[in-house]
Structures are given as C-alpha cells and as structure tokens.
Image (cartoon, rainbow, N blue to C red; front, side, top):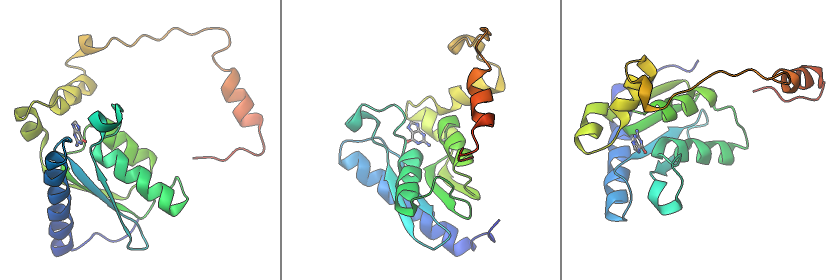
Length: 161
Ligand SMILES: Nc1nc2[nH]cnc2c(=O)[nH]1
C-alpha cells in the first residue's frame, strides 16, 4: 500500500473534487465530483452522470474509477487514492473496493447528502440491516448454481480479479 498523502495534498484534491461537483450542478448534473489519483500521479476526474446518461450507476466516484481504469488499461487500481466531494455511497465504496483503491478521502458526509435529498444515508442503513424492507433479497439455490464457478476454476486461462 502506498504511503498516505500529506494533509496539503488531501485538501487540494478535495477542493478540486468539490469544484467539479459545483460545476456539474451548473452543467445540469448532480452535485458530486471525484478524482482518482493513480500511482503514477495522474489525476482522473469524474462527475455524476446519472441523469445525463440515464445510468443509475454513474456516480462521480464510479465515473472517476472507470476513467482511471480505462486510462491505465487496468482493472486493478492498487496504489491509487480516491477523493470525493461527498462520502462515497455503498455503490461507490464497493466500486473502490473492487478497483483495489488504496485509500478514500471525502469532504461532505452522507448526512449533508440526505439534507439535499439523496438516499446515501438510507442505503447505508439498508446495509447495516436496519432497513430490510427497502429491497428484499432472497437466496434460492437452483441445481446449476455452482456450474459457472466450476467452469471458472477449471479454466486455466482465467484472468483473476
Ligand atoms: N457519493 C455520492 N453519492 C451520491 N448520491 C447520489 N449520487 C451520488 C454520487 O455521485 N456520489
């Protein structure tokens, strides 16, 4: 894991993410901006494109992660840092985990997002188990459930991630 950025760097990149978020509102989008700084020092920006692209997963952090991965030609962003104008929601956190991002810094928190009408805090409660009715998830095993995993394990050419 890379060493932690300095307080100066953290503040600079968070300011940049907040500026991106504000500019995105001016452009008609959601009030979220993010940066991924990859291990080579390059900065990859993202803003919320949910309504622009009709893509509910196009959160600023996910857009920045996708940009960083595409520019790096690598799905593994180990050594990189994510800076977000607002606390990453569970979707964004999961994306950062799958991207193997080293660290995350954010400016506003989930309660500020809630005050602006966003469900980030509610979805955290869902994952904490206090809002189970929001979206029931049921396990129903079928006989072929394990077939794809056997095929994966048996494939010597698999690319692990
Ligand atoms: N952190 C974060 N929270 C959101 N809630 C709705 N959209 C977003 C987004 O793009 N980023």
